[in-house]
Image (cartoon, rainbow, N blue to C red; front, side, top):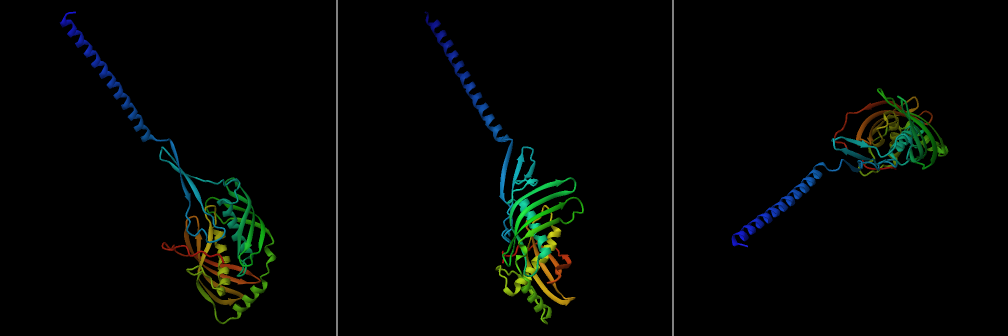
Length: 320
């Protein structure tokens, strides 16, 4: 083969190899570009939904009383930016006795029993919910049925109760309606203590007063316990009236009380109480005019809601 032919062949071969090599580089480059694009799109769009657990709700003051209930919730976030609270518990049908709807309803029963049977020596709390159910009443509200154990704080006597309560709904919402029957609750006899307390303060020329019960350490002086317990029972009248399906009340503290002159054989007191609304964590101030005698029981004649206290904190924990 002539030399010029060989040179032409070599040039052609080199050009072909260069073309193939450039083509491979182009394909390889396009492949990496496509891969990077897919990664970027995945990062930007992400998964279509995401669930974030927020854990337990506020813990401040949840140990104020043995029937306090911690709350929890799940938040569902979508790609459209919408968010909604998803309840962990079912509020219609058979209820889990340890969950909020059943225990909230039991707390309302507790307040009802205090308005019926409470005294300076009888302060009732529920201790256990055994079973419960609820059902919607069309365009009227929701009805609950409960089996529960209640306990008197002073004597520790327990009683078994069956209760039915109804939460009305709509504008002008009224207080819940409660019916309850209990066995064993009357086994504690406080008649002698109540009569001695009544006679002592009915005839006394020294009208009693007190404040900050319990104190900042959670302590209650023995001489102040009947007045603290009477304040708790009187507070149940307010807490029963104000309760609905979005509240959970306990009395946190007697800010102060003053005994007034006895009228018509009734001991009379002005009370200023702090109520702890445990869902909002709000401390609510009420002033009450309270009367009591062994024959007539506890009566709340006047109530006055006080202005909100924005700097107030929950008083210390105490249950006895």
